[in-house]
Image (cartoon, rainbow, N blue to C red; front, side, top):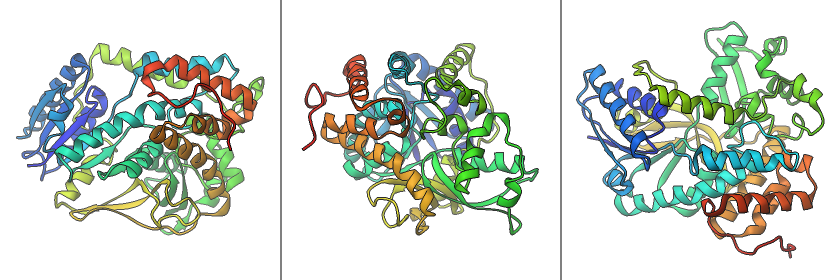
Length: 427
């Protein structure tokens, strides 16, 4: 009887989707225990009601428990699903957007890279490692399925600081594959994807043996996807994450005083706050009970690990001989197979040089943020921000240092103390 613990179960839409997906699995529907945990008792109660109704709708024998005690939920867990947001929309996400605006720095999502992604990583890594420390004591053989952003930073940190088996899961690969199939008027596409989370690339894109890249070059980009098609035009491969995300991972699409770029590429500034407001309003109206399968990987991975059919997916794992021309300690997103043996990633060799170079600009930021979170080195935060492609293209070194100080002060106790009060010259 597998026990699946949800840390951050108050993310009710996500919890609904994954619980429902598990209940679709014949090997799991009658034997699984769902242990829901959240620090928000009201949202937790909502998630519990939804899970109970899903079990009833599926006519399944699975059981549901709910608690605000994280250790109780994790005790004896075989699988742990993380889907929390440290600091919430208010105050933390609002701070991540509003403080940089005072410096002329605008963002779209701010959950993966950029100054917002750095701050989110600094406040989230310690909490995820607390979860891992509980697991090391209570359920050392558990498999951690992380859905929290910034994905690459978090999985990098757990690989460095914990013995818990972890794989990071995202829907950008399968989501983009479906979008490309739609753009090409096809029912589906075959592909091989590798890189890092949100900046992985379709190394192979085919349908029934036909290379689809020549046809894709003839596609008129949808209005909402102009950024990625422009990148494809110049770099030769299609990137996995959305245009609104990628616009802030690079120095080319968001520039202060260049409204022509914002308009030309249809960049939705402040997109994530709008989504948060919409999600809060939807939660207040009540989450619908939806029994359809989602496109998340989690349930198929659990089924495979429990002895069901092997399942192929793209997962975020440590780069231990997987991508030759990326750093060996970073977190990469590569093809993986889930089975009763666990999670087995597949080596892909070297990426095309231009793709590895572009990815490295993001890896620089991730590595320094992880270092800051694990060691308390404040200088690493400044350096991460200074090396961030978007931030560095907009602000001077001194302005970036001032922005980091302002953000750390605004976040207060949400980010654990870092050594030193101001920038020290690197020796």
